[in-house]
Image (cartoon, rainbow, N blue to C red; front, side, top):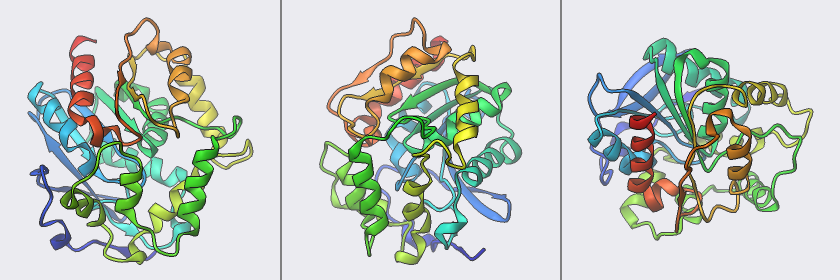
Length: 297
């Protein structure tokens, strides 16, 4: 496996993101993460999706730290400051689950985790939570899901997948902007481009849409079905914190609220005026909802 590592100087200017990177080696790869809040606070793991990185959670982290929680925002393999396997075929759903699990539980040895996932962060985080419930205290699903291929994906998602797969040059900042309701300033757009000096660094970003299970016989479908069976009976508090304007995952919110045992009888926020990347459009609000959820359950 050929591994690329983004030069550190690419991250010299990151607005509102003062957190020093930390690193751990997982399966021969260097994975990066940042932390905010007291080291002995309850851990809240923040998993980003495609094609963003931990920078996406900068406003959420500030709110969690202010509430006395330990925010741990991970860069998935292939994104942010984490190492980047150079071929799309290096990336599988199972590998990303295992890489992330190993970082959280083997390297960081986290327990009592509140798992927060958005986009691919949910596809990975929900799997980890289902497969290792003894490490999990709570779950927050934010504009995400856990597809098994048994239900068709929305047409807008297929258009997104095709745009990524067929793009000769993948404009990362433009894709992030397209998932926001607010206009991103130039320095924020530059921060989303920072992990990718050229097209050779974008294998994960190009591969991820094709790894989402869309047919019942997808290689990841059995594991995701097993995760559903666990999560729908798991007695862990489950918060559904979706925006009101995400055409890709919006349909999952009522399904999660109805299906997840830990979601029953809970007041689930709907974050107004936010798109798919609700951390950009309403990060502080999302952070306050997560902090309240952790501190009262």
